[in-house]
Amino acid sequence: MCGIIGYIGKREAAPLILRGLHRLEYRGYDSAGIAIVSGEKLFAVKSAGMITALEARPELKRLIGNIGIAHTRWATHGEPTEQNAHPHLDCKGEIAVVHNGIIENYMELREALQKRGHTFNSETDSEVIAHLIEESYEGVLEDAVARALKLLEGTFGLAVVHTGERKVVAVRRSSPLIIGIGQDEMFVASDVAAVVEHTSRVVHLDDDEIACIRQDGFSVMRLSGEMVEKRVDKVEMSLSQIEKKGFKHFMLKEIFEQPASITNLLRGRLKDGKITLTPNLGLARFERVIFVGCGTSWHSAIIGRYLAENLAGIRAEFEYASEFRYRKPIVTNRDLVVVISQSGETADTLGALREAKKRGARTLGIVNVVGSTISREVDGGIYLHAGPEIGVASTKAFTSQVMALLLLTLYIRQERGLENDPELIREAAAMPAKINAMLDNLDVIKNIAREFASYKNFIYLGRGINYPVALEGALKLKEISYIHAEGYPAGEMKHGPIALIDDGFPVVFIVGNDAQHEKVLGNMQEVKARKGRIIAVCSEGDTDAARVADYCITVPQTSPLLSPILNVVPLQLLAYYVADAKGLDVDRPRNLAKSVTVE
Ligand code: F6R
View 1: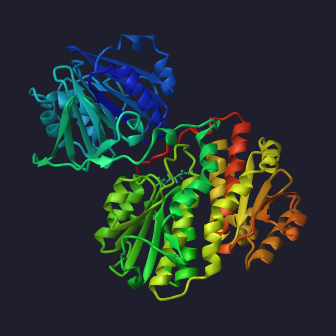
View 2: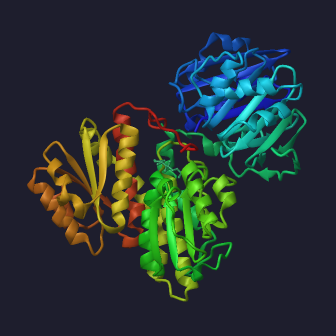
View 3: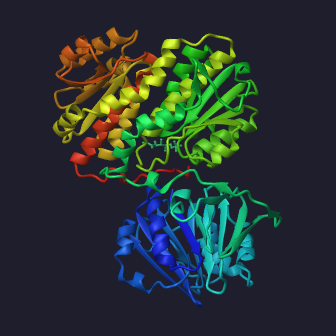
């Protein structure tokens, strides 16, 4: 969460890093700040609110200089006020620090620093870092940072500047950080999106590495003092991928990108009825698969279990990463733990991955962001190649994750010597065209969204493989429209939630075209009998569901195992149009951030 960026070069730093900061805004957007080293002086400007509020500050004009750092915040410690915004400065105003992460022992450090005469200007955990560096400073910034770090517990991505030195020092422990290598200029940032406009050459820092970045190069050492030779990676992302291209919001653009993102996922992996995945992990030998993730990726994990049991005939479980990592999970080297994460940086998912490895399991990542921490720590992986997902609400990553899980489980099936169903393979290949067809006609969804935008509660119900789709539909609605929405297994409704149903309580049914179809119709009748208003997502030609529902959104027919991919699209659109009708900031919903790198 929080985005950080730094620059050193020949150009004016402020406009450059503010533009880059906008590309990181999805990581947090409750306050922002910038510090520029100008000659022997340091100037900082901070503001509550989004980066545009910072840009409106007249003092920005005085920020002249070629070295700078900036920050966009997702508050953890201290309210999102100007005072708590980063950068934080030391007592003398010579050192500025931007921080992404959490300093767990900040209370004791702060008390000790105050006793030694340091004055604090914020309530944040991060400010201790500036004061600790101040105490350790003996003329070489990276050495002072290294000494200060030995006292810190927690997670951090840091960028630090000092008025007396032409360099930016950057450090990483569990919070992502890359160095961008330009022509006579260098960058540091939380994510490549911030620098892609200027360079396609990046270096991914690893935990406990300290980078000293100068205009003409950089060096990296471990906290232990030993120098490290880093590999330079080529960035896959292009600038046009991170622009809205005429769409009102990134979320809408990303919903529309799903035919392309699924095509990219399938490319080279589906041929002549066979699945090709690399590297070969010897997947046939595992006795159990455990799928873990958070949020939307956890919904994919649930689908993973259905697919693994149905297609690969393998014992399967799913779990929240934040729970898995703190249990004492019994896993062995006969278990495959599949970690699912769009960003590849989610702290809980990374924690679960490390726990699984520690306990001897083999691990496989289903990740979108190339070069992310999870993608580098798993034993093997499947990249989604969905392109950057910038809207905070995950859309195209979800459908690609489901397709990746289908490929993975079909692959295990193949490895176990079982035949694949050619019809299922054909249907998988047809998904992009089927989503495209749905995106051609949005009037029904727009009308339903307009009609229901003022309701206060929704419940989403589905069974079997469409139960996680109900969870995902409810999550999308609540996170961007702030309407209370619950997802539930349809069969469980009569065990409690049915008490909520009346004519003011819309119920969204996901009606699969599968063995449980009749059961879902029965659940719809139960809602109808209590005057609940029913919105049904059902397959074309499902006249039974259409007859019971008050509103019907149809999706093309497909195999039940692929139905989540088609059924979720109208739910993404419904949430989008409801939030838009309410005039909300769809891409930056309150209290949220895209990349959750804290626990
Ligand atoms: C919801 C959403 C979140 C993420 C979750 C995990 O729309 O985006 O629930 O799915 O924070 O993120 P990743 O997949 O990056 O690990």
